[in-house]
Amino acid sequence: MINHTSYLVMQKTRKCLLVGLYLFVFCIAGKHAAYSQTLKDSINTLSLKQCIDYALQHQPAVQQTILLKSITKEANAVNLSGWYPQVGVTVNYNHYLQEPISLSNINGVETPVQTSVVNTAIPGVGVTQNIYNPSLIYVSRIAPLNMKAAEQSIDSSKIDLVTNVSKSFYSLLLVLQQIDVLKEDTARLGESLRTAYHQYVGGIVDETDYEQAAISLNTSLGQLVQANESLWPQYAMLKQLMGYPPEKQFNVAYDSTELLKEININATEQLRYEKRIEFKQLMVQKKLQSELTRFYQKTSIFPTLSAFYNYNATFQNNSFSHLFNTVYPNSIIGLTVSLPIFTGFARIHNVRRSKFQEKILDWSEIDLKDNIYTQYATALATYRGNLYNMQKMKENVTLARRVYFVTDLQYKQGIVPYLNVITAETNLKTSELTYLNALYQTLSSKIDWQKAMGDIVY
Image (cartoon, rainbow, N blue to C red; front, side, top):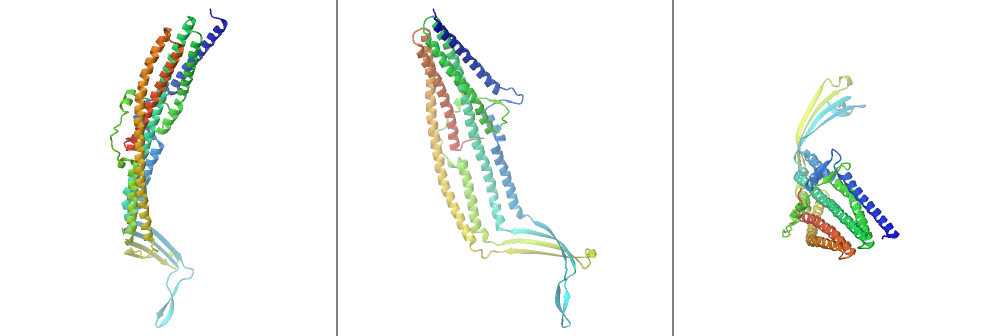
């Protein structure tokens, strides 16, 4: 006979079970409502490659660096425009309130003579053409380097983007896999709860077995709800990195088999500093600084040579109304040579300053190589440790499944207490979640290793 207290406990347990199952259904339904394709303009599924391709086309930071390259191109065009003819138009109008006087010797007498008329208008056209200009030669030499630096800036932003999108994608997959594990866990615990209850009704065990089962089920349901709720910020982070509209939804597509196939790396590959984008950028900086030193040392001491042509149409008349009746044109063509003789030792100091800056970049190269090697060593060691841990955790999952199967069967046969089932089930869930963490930590460390090696492709 079941006494009144046991009956109340049974009723309370049933209510907990119903509430737990309701939370389970609500959790799963909420997930599908949030992330299934309900909008006709939504993308169905996106693989990692599709996420990266979309990000490369829409991520604001990458698009900004592309625009900076265009700005650099236009800046080069501005700097090199000095090689083209420079044409200008000027117009001067003069009205004398008092006309200028000069003294002329007329018949041996110094006689004042007016040298101008009241009104003068002189429209003119001037053309100059640089033939040899040290500054223009310098900007011509560095223009390709400026463009290369801009392109490298784009490459750097794309490498960072691929790295961040990949890690965010793997982090999202981890949560999705955790949800699947917790769904299986709640299903097992629900079955265990039913088994414990029927065995209690049959008088095989006492009420504490199904009470413990209810506690475990509620704990698992809470973890499942939390995992589902964490999907929202995970998707939001991935969308932000991709430049994807926040109001649109998409699901991620992945193949677990392919992930495991691609997890291995060639650990024997030698580190090559020149493959790193940071090293390439530093080399361009050093070339730019070398060109500046060369300019101050050699090019700037040469003269500037340019040709000019001026045409003026002069109109003169004491009466403004007749000013433009007659034109007196004049034109001139010539060469201009400008040679700096003494500039207060500015060139010498500029040369010294530029050489000091070159030495700073030499030290920067040494420091960068040290940093790259540290990143490489850290990434490789982390990857190896994570890979070994993942392999062992995978073995643990196999063992834990076997232990749970045997323990659950023994409990149903009345051989072992329910505490053994709880322990086996907890170990199984823990081993599965630990394996997933180890798997995605290994994938993430592989990305770090590829970045350290300069092997990120896009």
